[in-house]
Image 1 (tube, rainbow, N blue to C red):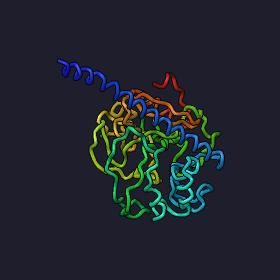
Image 2: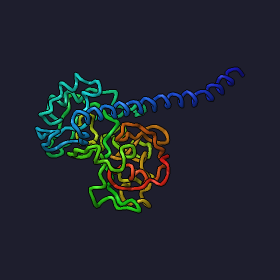
Image 3: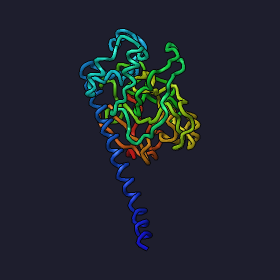
Image 4: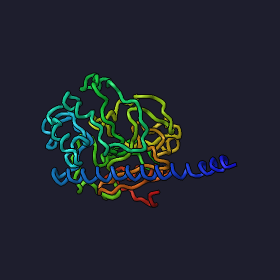
Length: 300
C-alpha cells in the first residue's frame, strides 16, 4: 500500500517539477535575448545603425566586403571579447581561423529548452562559399534575425515593396529613424531552435536538412516570416492554407521548444513572450519596420 501511495505522489509531483524546470529554462532564454538586445543597442551606439542580418558586400559597416553575420559582429558587446578579438573581420566567416572560433559554443546563443541534435561535420557549397569539411561542429545558435515578411497574408500582399522589411536584413544599415512603425512594435530577433536539423510539428523529421542556421558564425541564418500550415510542411501560400506564425517548423520560421509560444526580441530592446495562437496578420505587422499597419488587438 505504501509503495502505491509513493507512486501516486511521484506521479503528482513530476509534472510540477517538469513545469518548474521549463519555467526556469524559459526565463533563461528570455534573459539571453535581452542580453542580445543590449549588445545590438551598443552596436548601434558605436556604428549609428543596426547591424545587418549578414553582410555580403562592401559597406561602411563591412569595409572588406566579406561575408559576416550579426552574431559575430556583436560579440564584443556580449562579454565575449576574447572570441571577438580573435575573429578576423577581413575574412569570410568560413575562413579557417573564423571556423575555429565559430566552433566555440556560446551559451548566450543557446536556448536551454532546445534538445541536443546532431551537428554537421560538413557543409554543402553555397556560392561563393565552397564545400566545407569541419574539424569541429559549429557552435549552435537558437536565435535568428527576422528580416521581414515575404508572403501574401490577407489583407495584404507582402511581396511588393521595401515596406516588407524589418530592421536587420541582408546588407542593411537601418537607423532608429527608419523604424516608423515604432521600435517597440518591430521584431528584431526570434527563436529558431535546433537548426540545421529540421523539425515539423514538434517532431524531428530530418537531421541536417537545412542549409541555413549552421551556427552562430553563419552569416546566412536570417529569414523572413512566411507562415506555415499545421504540419509545418507548407509555407507562404497565404492565410487560409498557412495560418500559423510559429512553432510549426524551424525550417526558417520562428520556432521554440517552449510549450505554447516563442520569445520575440524587439528593436527597442525588450523581449516579449508571444503566444503561438497569435494571428498571422498581426505577427506579420510586427515584422515590418515601416509597413504602416495598425495593430487592432493586443498581442497574445
